[in-house]
Length: 95
Image (tube, rainbow, N blue to C red; front, side, top):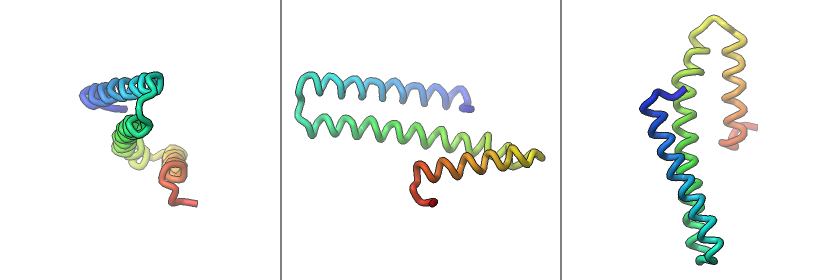
């Protein structure tokens, strides 16, 4: 998984995202201007996407790399299947 320094950075991002999401709730309760609420939602969504990017990169550099280098064919096939599923779900480019 993530190295300690990377984990700290990701957890700090998650704390900020939690704050952004809580702010959305407060904005809705206060009946703030819709565009302002949507901007806050967009910021939280973007921040979550960045966290996902960091986790995926780490997964590729550690778990997938390790599976490709070991002699366990089942492990390699499983990691490749996981990646295909991820790309199908999030990239929308593989049928």
